[in-house]
Length: 121
Image (cartoon, rainbow, N blue to C red; front, side, top):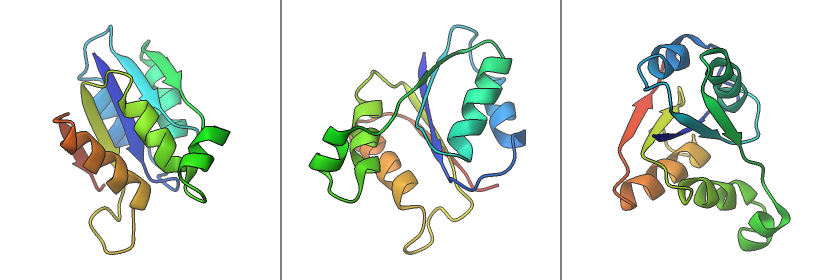
């Protein structure tokens, strides 16, 4: 199983992510991005629980494809790696003008019929 972890760069707790990752099969691969907050927590907790982690970084091609919004390119690339589930963590998810990156990843996943779980606390 390949699980994408996405969310807030200011997410400051490992409680929710630990709870969710602890429920996954032991051969799960965690895919996440390169920002502080949820990405950093995902890497730390996943490694602690013995999961393989694939941390992906924004590239120049991401910025060329989405000028000023390279995170969109990263979201696209992460989701095309065979993701089976998306776990999204953002306290402001659903609020107008907030959580743009998280919302983008969730929308792409939903369009691709990938199951999504959203956590706001």
